Structure formats: C-alpha cells, structure tokens
Length: 336
Image (cartoon, rainbow, N blue to C red; front, side, top):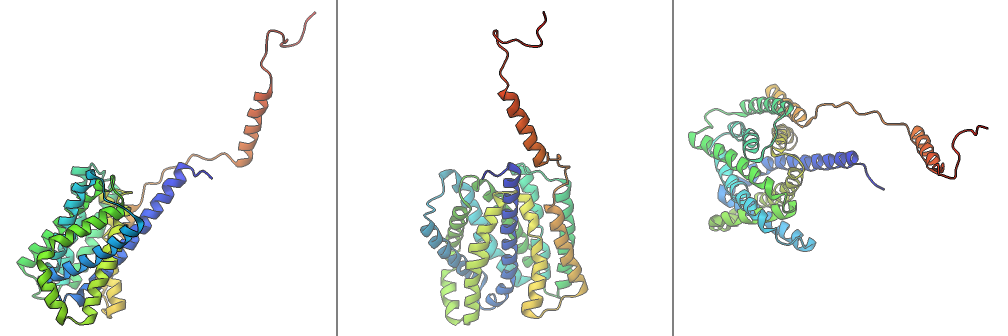
C-alpha cells in the first residue's frame, strides 16, 4: 500500500520526536549516575571509562549489523564531533562540575543550545523561525530558574565557570559538525566512530582509570558502565537519528527538557524535593521545548469525500468509453 507524502512526512517526524525523547530522558538520567561515579573517579578517568564502554557496545552492534566504515566524505564531521563532543566536552564538563555547584554548571552549560542555533544559522543555513526563538527564550529562562534554585553558597569558582563555558562551546561545535556527516553516513556509523575517536582522545587518562577502578566501589563502576551503554551508546545514536531528520537548532532546543527531567529524577531517585522555583523553572523548560518544536497551523485543503471521488472516476471512465467522432460517423441530428 502506497503512503501519501504527507503521511510519510508525518511518520518521519514522529519517529524523530520519539528518538529525541529517548535521548533527553537518558541524558537526564546521566546526571544522577554521574553523582555516584564522580565521587570515585576523576574527570578524565570517568570520561574514558564511559566512552570505552559505549564504544565497545557500539562496535559489537556495528559488527552484527555489518554497518561498515563511513564514507570518506563523512569523516571530517565525525572526527570533529568525536574530538569536541565525545572527548573534550565530557572531560571538561566532568572537571567543571567538580569546581562549581550543580546550579551554576546547569546555567553555563545551557547556553549550548543558543550557540548551536547561532552556529547552525551561520554555518549550516538553518532557519530560525520566531517560534523556535521564542521557545528557546522561554526554556532558557526556565534553565536560569532551575540553576538559581540549585545554586549553593560558596560552590562556584572562576575556573569552574570557564570549564563549563568551554564545555558548552565543545557541545555546540560537535553538534554542528555532526549534522553534515549524517547526510553521508548512518546515525550508527557517525555515533560509533565519533565515540571511538573520543575514546582515543581520552587515552592519556588510562593510568588514572586503572588505578581508580581498583579502589572504586562496585556501584560507582556500574554507574560508569551505565553511562557508557545508555546515555552514550544508545542516547547519542537516537540523537544522531533525530538530528539527521531535523535542524541542529531545533534539536538543540529539545535538550532544554533535560533540566526539568533531572529535577524529576532527582526527586524520585534521590529524594531531593524540589522547591517552588525549581518546579516553575522545570515547567518553563518543558513549555519552551513544546513551543520551539511546534509548527504554525496551516489550513488544509478540504479533501473530496470518497463517494464523490468514485463518482468522478466513473464519469471519467464513461467519457473515455464514448467513441470519438470520425469521418464515417454522423454527429448531431440528421436534417432532410
């Protein structure tokens, strides 16, 4: 059965939205796991363990599915995203979050979607409709509210703020570099080889990882493996799948749902009851994402009822059955 272009487009949008939802949920869960693993592992060792776990899982999936190597044209974007996002971003963010409180880190890192929108418009030609800009503004206001409500006293440092700022730039640069690669390679290929490159970038921390793993509690190590398998291997793949089917700016705005989900997960998993300002900020984050991903309503052309379509088809067939006038056929009434 043939699907109409409109139905196919709608199905693609729903699949991309579902993939983006999986991504933000798993990325939100990563913050809870990082709190456990970060107590036992240093920033570089945690990043290497996470990436190595993710690269191993992705490599097995690629081998089973015989995904093969990405085309040569995709390697530039894969390499840049692997260095900036999988490698640099994870190390610097882990380091920055040890220098500042969670609220300050959330505030600074959440300029990432804004940077993605600016870079996407400049380098990729992404269109920034008013709804996207309005949604990002609302979500950023919500992220500010969440950050302020989570900020503690004396937990910030200039170094920590700079590190989180660098993490935001690494994140934005990696996403914008990844977008063109997805037009030449599959989401699985881009994620697998980007994760592998990030692992290579973090290899200087191998000694720390081996030393700290010997003394780390099992729960911290399991959280590190979880970070590699789900928020990295699975979530980055679903992210790439969704990014290939929409703009970098729209995908960046989607990640503003993460702070709201972190608040909810911390409440459920850690018993951290959020205050009114935190709840209000989380609601603003989700509202902004909804606005940024919405589309202006366009009036649809009324469809012809099926019965009328059938009558019209029979009328056309009847006309086609009438023989054309010829030289030996009389047309019109005969006169004497």
